Length: 496
Ligand SMILES: Cc1cc2nc3c(=O)[nH]c(=O)nc-3n(C[C@H](O)[C@H](O)[C@H](O)COP(=O)(O)OP(=O)(O)OC[C@H]3O[C@@H](n4cnc5c(N)ncnc54)[C@H](O)[C@@H]3O)c2cc1C
Image 1 (cartoon, protein in one colour):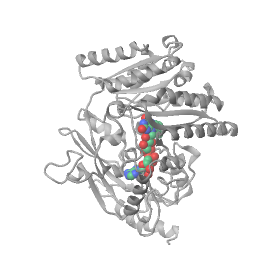
Image 2: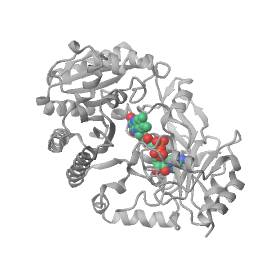
Image 3: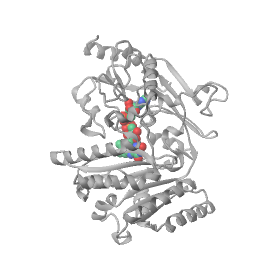
Image 4: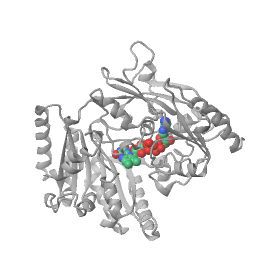
């Protein structure tokens, strides 16, 4: 076994001395994620991975070296949600230096980017060609594409287009032994036609390297399907319903997704607007006093005819079920005003930053904890009621804990549900309340069969693994085949 000094020296040989650090301050800084104190494991050494203009990068050499000496390797994306915490120490790869957008093909509507390119920069490159990724999250420049693909990232547009992983048509992956594999559309790279579709004349293995928490290979290139898009083709609306109308909300959402009318629907509740209203960010008189649920809805329409048709369908579906239009929220949280401060007039839904809703809430409450999961839309009412009851029981149903919901409605007739609680991390009683509530959420969610999305599956207990039956065994066999020394993000997909 090599000493840390020997490992550092070897890595410096591979990437150059400037890009390796075992300094305690760097190690602590790289450990920080949005999951705050939940994962406290530090890397032994941080390595910055840079690519040159000629596309060369040191990933293969780093992995070959780590594999030979059985050193754990975890790729870190942007801010991180906890899933890139190096649970077993070892090497943390800072992927932000592999950040190039390599090609945009407007004719065939795809983009190829390196694994460390920010989603933000991919949007920027596509916009130059009148294209967009139809899936825009609220993370601004904070996250990178290889990580989004591996963690199951989503964004506005999910109601029509699904996960970011649904847009992936090709990948280039570096395996633990240093081999490079090109999958899907990228397997056709180098031919006269080049990449054009996901399916090739062999079984598809793309899925193995998506939602895999970087535990099967490191993504060096991603090829994504884009769509034609312009900012002025996206139209924002918000509809509000009372607390006693959740069944109608559920029905309206199902109708809107089935009818394929909407580009996106975001489901929130009044807690999300409580502190912004207190701060005077919205004109309270323009928001129904008994409005509890708020459905931020985006239509995609290329001309007035398409818009008129979709608007009519949407309004009918909402209004027949008692929904009331709230332009105040559409204008200030989604529309022109929000975008004026955003990314070149493109959607930027401001979760963080001085004007972000989350920052406003944090100013009045504390740190946030969130449980992210997917479940069928037909269970929305039942699940909301269960969560409210659990929060009430744990003393969290008040403005100080801002126990809001912030959720994407998906094209799979499901909901990507984020239950929030804001809490004081320095107050043990508050932390205990949070833990108790989280335990309750895990219990009722696990039993029903939710699909967890954050921060790591390993925190959800044995049930999500057990219910997969022999599929989990098969995945372990595949992991062993590809990564026999278990160097890639060990523990991230493990049970316990
Ligand atoms: C302010 C903010 C707002 C957010 N809003 C949204 C939102 O609206 N919608 C949404 O879906 N999510 C949102 N997120 C979460 C976001 O999806 C995750 O942060 C993101 O998916 C993880 O990417 P990351 O860059 O933070 O990387 P990390 O958390 O560091 O990485 C995620 C996983 O990918 C692996 N990985 C990283 N790079 C590679 C690579 N090149 N190859 C293989 N594996 C790799 C890591 O090891 C880890 O397992 C938000 C996050 C922030 C910070």
